[in-house]
Image (tube, rainbow, N blue to C red; front, side):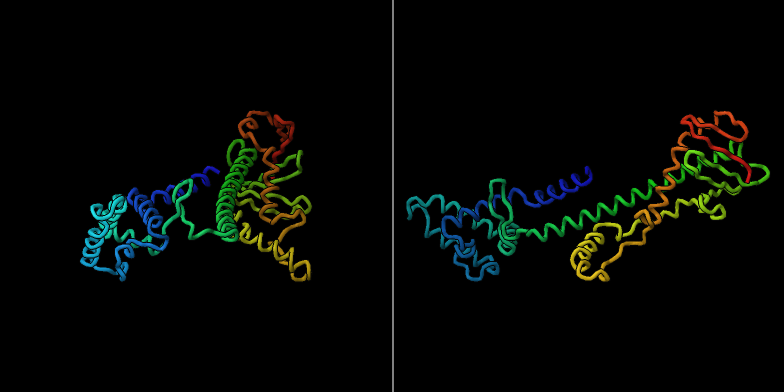
Length: 305
């Protein structure tokens, strides 16, 4: 959440910082000129420059001098404010940098003044565009979250493997290079620790089947796991899939528990963590007939395979 807030703050700050003090003064002057002379009036049309932004400097200077003589306060009473505005307009159009900035807003559109400041009213994102943007951003954050979860799952598996090795080899690697079996009567899971350090989970229904515990087997997340894919699939199944069942899109392969094989494996391994939480305390407990009793009441036995 903090990352999202920081991102939004940076985005808003960058948009605000894009307008300088000079830009705001330009916005104010443009609004005043339009209120005084009409909503379609531009700095160029006020000076009678038919070429508009393509007018040359000499043409601008000549038109400015002509108009300034025409509306000089000595000739027209109560024209002081308009004359002052004309002076500022003339300075802007005769300055290359300020003129370029004015031409930019003249082409792209001037922002409108609101109670909170100047905002663009020319472009108002609709509901669909807002939904698409939020959909894309949320999917990106979800993908990042999946990557972080994957790293945490790998870390937990490495920790569990290390604990199993410590339980199987309290005095170090056996000199006879025999395999050791570590089991838990609490949850019925049994592991085989090979002499080369590899750890296998025995299938409770078939002891001849073993599953290697490898942190790298927890593959990287896929975009198919994010809302980018799951939401369109849900919409399709909710609409077209209800018309014809054969049209339904199936998610990734799942087992009987409703989880993907990777998720099921992680859950299964995490359920054994309670039996292997504190390896140091286990080593302090005495071994009796090859059985070690844990502080939480669970019994773990180690024996040669």
